[in-house]
Length: 122
Length: 110
Image (cartoon, rainbow over all chains, first blue to last red; front, side, top):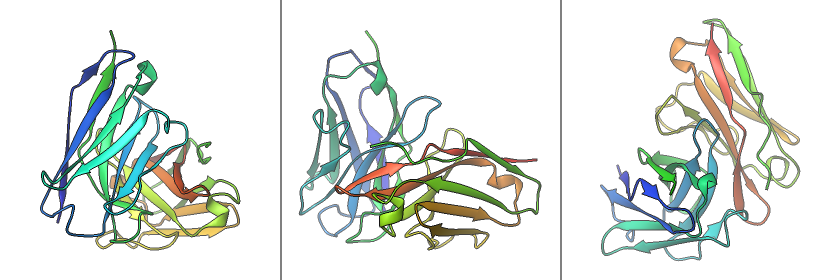
């Protein structure tokens, strides 16, 4: 059973780029057809889907964030990453990485990281 | 894309059944069978409870069930227990190959 762990800076300055990594253990990212994703949750607010991707396809993004988001995967390190550029205080949130329930489908995330809090502040 | 609409709160007594609605449009909930539900306890990661409208992942209690009618999906919790007190979020695939979450519902066990 895979386990996911987010890592990255807890504080980012406005206008800079937020960069997070999700380390995957208990399974190889490159050795299967699971979908992977990023979801965030601002303080005392609801969940917001950011992006999903599949090893052999193009990522797809939340339209409201598309111009600022990039996701990538490093199969040699068994991790994937999120970059969010030009951040503002509105990007302050707990960021989760997740893995799909089934291989080949992306409609439900079964395995989640514990989440990492990122604060945007000068 | 706008968040799917859920009631802010739903409550019930132990043993009762409650239903949480999730209303979207023909471009999301009404147009696809890719609706999922997540349970989130305070300061915890979400947990998948229902996928593909009606299916339960392994290990999820059969007290949780999902359904859909038109543009509205629903999650029913039967035999309500204290441990069910949490926030619940629906999620749906949308046209344009994206996903959208609901606004979230706080379930209180009286």
